Image 1: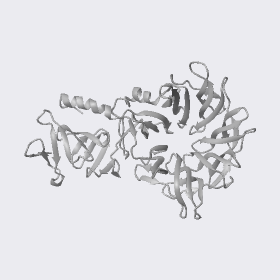
Image 2: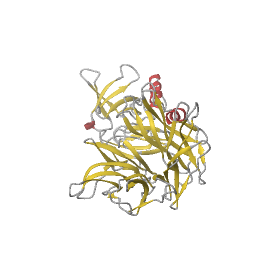
Image 3: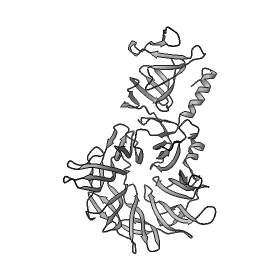
Image 4: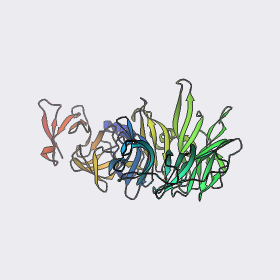
Length: 494
């Protein structure tokens, strides 16, 4: 884009900073280009899963809503909107919590509290195929056991977690309608399933022994204790790479600086050998949450106690072998030019992160300057345009209800509008948009509650003004009322 004046150039630079901050949660996939950080104000507030179906250009976010002070498991889809989990007829839902969403976006799992036909309150785990009612887990475990799913395979066929059987915690897998207790390692007092590979063939978690906890891997159903490096103990596995060759977790080990021990992020290879990751300076513990498909990228959260506030502080991290571990906030600023503390995005702090299998998305939990927690998505490859209340009607085509307009987006942020022709529309903040209108040769601002009133930023003070667009009079030309003049003057633009 060519700047038409000094004012436009300054404004253009300002909005280039805002290109990374799309706050509106209705996703539309456009052409490859830059990256975007997106807090979510209408998707589930507590993100437990994110799926990307690249071929179909659709995305799903799994998490939990709060309805009448009760949690509701929900999945938000870029094409189908929000769907909330429902139980079979005859069961009354009290509360549900989503724990994980499959990578293909078809299946979720979690826990539910409900009443049966006799008004008896019960708790159970569920497997929910999106678009249908949830099924409650049954199987070889005892009926009275409390079941807690932790993770789900990429196609939703296998679920892993832990349950209480006869008062003892045990790991389970759930497949083809049957919940099966995993084989316990020799000498284990309890064991728990925490993560699995994309195809569900490699499971991981931990077991508690007399000497403490130890990370466990199940391959072909056989449990193996993962090794501790010199000076390390008390390990837990928390993530498995998509190909099942790398397992991430944490182990009690020496602090990076100073005396004492802390939870250190670690990786295990197929042979069960451990490698400790170097932590970010100034943080005590590091807990991995996710690995990408081949285990070359890990994400999670850092933790430290803040003596001033008397509270624990958290920060999302990202790790790879080349750059090592750094906070995700630092990575966004240094590698993508996205500064979440400059006021444009509400001073967000990122507290946990999970990387997608292909490493193109990172999702997790963010907190604003007022302490309000929300989910976020960071897209490393593409711009996603977020027009709240829009409907996808074709490839790169949406209908925006509040604009009463069809938008064709061949290469974002360049947009063709049936009303305003070619416009340049960077992502907005809280439904507010600054738009460069080529036919007007100027920028104008509006939002979903203000439109069809527009604030035009002209070349001069005289041409900077409020306009009212008469939609009922057609589009070529477009007629506007110049509200700066009393009485207002009707002007026309192509």
